Structure formats: structure tokens, C-alpha cells
Length: 558
Image (tube, rainbow, N blue to C red; front, side, top):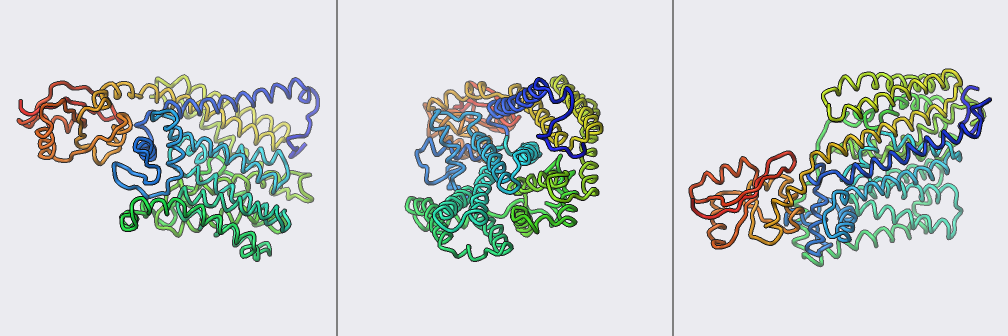
């Protein structure tokens, strides 16, 4: 029974309809629980947690009605093109407020789109429905992908557009003859490339060409790069990508647009030459256990000789990995678009080493696959035993930590036992994936409960109510932190910052006779009120980013 396919039948009671029904119900429950926990997590995450920069820019767009010129703290912001910001601004405009989930919605939808794209890619390359399901299960349970689904940065949206572009290009090159069908796929492909470029800049086109040109020549179809269909695609790309820059220049003027571009710092987060190589095992964990086996499979079995799909996946990963290593600026999230390729290669390795799925199979490779699977299950079992001890200080969440440990421990023991007894390789992979998905659901529940405990939005809105109503206000000492942006989002108005006491006193004297308010960190407020020329009439306190912030009604004199 070694290496039995997932759709094969077991003997005896295991093949009963009731048993199969219960398994499907269990898997469905885990999927629903994981999705519900994820939605709960991102919907209760406080505004002052994570990365609210893009949400602040989107909020400014909605408040000012200017969707062409992105502004951060009243300054033009063109570090990135505006598509991701527009996607956040849409729900803000529809709901009339900055909801906690607004910054997360594009990434949640993009992750679903990426999973669907990977499913279609796997069906196109490997043909098997089970392989496709395993590919998306590996992808959705890989560490980096799961984290960026919950994030507020733009890399997941960039990834879904790149996956769409690669999928349509691969279909056009490998399975569609010249004609209308190929032209439509190429046009769709370059539409996705344009959307990726409007999300993250010219790197969208750079990465696309770095993947597709080597692949086209490797498969002997290099002429397609200059074929009529691709020329039409280039035109579509230029037309879509030029709309926003032209509108931007028309609104602010060429000189200001050039000045804004020149003042933008593009190169940040500089790291060493081995940064990605060291962090790749963490990014793709827990499936990074299989990366050495996948490399050995590629070198020893050379599956790319007969599979254009595997060639494309190799070009996909290699182009991104090499270009990102050559760049002086590095971040682990930049590797996110390579994770779908790794998930597809890992699932392809698993299925290629199962008897009956290919004409010949190396027993040594099958042993390597099974040994790696045992190592992964053993690591899960060890983690289940260690986590209650390592996380024992988190008393408020201890029940969920113990529940997660029990799930991981019992699940890994059950998988080890069934694998040892029945040698159901693919079924064991699915059990591991579903098990990890259930652990992510527990993780989301724990985070959501922590978010609810730490959320001070109601207190903040109450403290800032006079400013929201239109009273003259300034922030003091918040200029260089995200707290300035958060005050703006919570009050739904621009609250100008002041950085020095003389500047603040000048404003107080100018607004004399009106109710004036100052928002500052508690430490800065003490310094401010120590000045003999200023005094506070009323004050309120709340917390942003775990910092105590005070709202003071201020007047001149003691």
C-alpha cells in the first residue's frame, strides 16, 4: 500500500461512506473555523497596531476627495504607486469611517485570489486535482503567506497580480495556438502586469520579464516575446500604467512631481548578501523541511526535461531570488511572490515520488520524502510538548495554548501512527496541512482576544471628541511617530503638528478666546505644562501604540 494516492480506497471500515463523510465534515469544519478566526482577527485589530501608514493615506484621500495625489501627513507620498491605497480607500468611502478591517481587506481578498491562481496553475502543470489541493494547502499554511494575509502591507496584492500574469502567460505559450485565444490571454497577462506595476512600481514589469523571457527561450519559443500578441500586450501595459502618472503631473505640475520623485527615498532596509538564504527556511516553514529533498529531486530526477511547467516554476523562483539578492535593499516580505512557486514544486515532488503517478520512481527518493515527513511530524510533536512550558507566562491565553498543544500533539501522533501502519503518504500530507491550519485558527483566536483587550479606540474617540467636532487643535511631539497619523484618522480631520514650545505659544496667543486643545505624549505634556505661560483647564487620557497620550484644553497663563 506504499504511496497510495489520496483518491484510492482503503479496505474494511475505512472505506465506509460514514467514515468518509465524517472526514469531509472534519476538514470542512477546520476550513470554516480557520476562515472565521482569520476574519475575526483582522476585524478587531486596533488601528494603532501594525502598519497604518497606507490606511492613513487612504483616509486622507477620502477626506479631501483627492484620489490622484497621495498625501501622508499633508506631504505628497509617492514611495509606491496608489493602487493598493485606492483598494483601502474604497471601503472607507463606502462606510464613512476608518474601520479596523479596512487596511486588511485587500490582502485577505488577494490571498484568496492567489490560492485560486495556484490551484489553476497546478491543474495546468500537473493535471491532478489532488496535487492542486495539496499545492494550495502547502501555500496557505506556509508561515510567510499566512502572516501577510493578516498584514496591512501591499506585498500580497502584488503577489496575486504576478500570479495572474504568470498563469495567463504560461497558458498562452504552452497550450494555446496562435489566434484570438492566445491574444486574449496575452492581453489579460499584461493587464495583470500593469496592475502589479501600479501596486509596487516598475519592479512588476522587471520581475515579469526576468521570469518569462528565460522561460520562452528555454522552451524554444523565444519568438513570442516580439510576436504580434505581445506587442499588443506591451501597448495595453503602457496605456494602463500611464494614466495615473499623467493625471498626477497634470494636477501638481511637472516640477513639483519631479521634486517629489527626487526626494523619495527608494532604497531602505539594507541587508547582507546571505540575508534571503538564511531566512528562506523560516519564510517557507514548516514546509522548508522538504526544500533539500526538492533540490535533490530536481538534480537527480531532472523532471524539468519533460515538464515545461516545472521549467516555468524554476524560472519563477530563480529570477525573483537572484534579482532580490542583487538588490542592496532587502526584506523578507519581498520574497512572498516566490512562495507559490515553492508550494507548487513541493507538491510536484510529493506526487512524482508516488508509484503509479509516473512511469518510473526512485525508491531512494520515496524514502527521502517519507523520512522528511517523519521529521516534520516529529518537530510538530516536540513543539506541542514544549509550547505550554515556553508560553506558561501568558496566563490569560493559557487555555488556548494548551488546546493548541493538544491538537498538535494528538494530530501529529495520529498522523505518525497512520503513516507507519498504512503508508498513506499523500493522506498524511493532507492531515499535516489541515492540522497546521487548525493551529493557525487557534493562533488567530488568541490574537483577536489580545486585540480586544488592548483596543482603546472608544476611549480615544471620547478623548478626541472636541477636536473631532472642529475645535482648534495641535499635536505636540507626535510628528515623528505613527501616533500623529492615528490622531488624524480618529478625528477625521487634519490636526497640524507643532515641534517647539515657542511655536505652540504663538498659536495659543493667536487663538486666544477660543477652546484650544493639544494632543501629546504624557512626557511631552509634562514639559509643556511646566512652562509658566501655559496652563491646562481639562484633560483626558488614552493609549496609542501602548503610549499614554493626553488631550489637554490649554490656555495662556497660569
